[in-house]
Length: 81
Image (tube, rainbow, N blue to C red):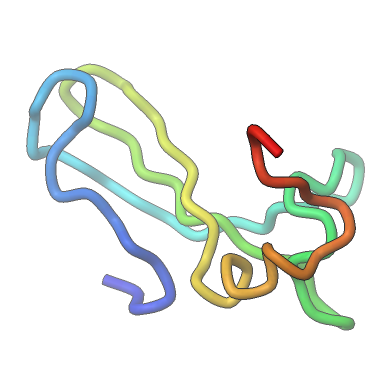
């Protein structure tokens, strides 16, 4: 497990434990930047993607370095404020 991510050990949807994961960039060459302002100068933020083999439920988790920038990032607002 990559220590930059906090990952589940069971599926939130079905309770299964057949989880698979990979790391991917939050900004693609042709797609939108899904975590704007949370990456570094030369690299974007990353997601750990977790897929349940039993039901297909897919979750995206931002890395700890991205989460640490969240409160100060101008592109993000706390929900409810």
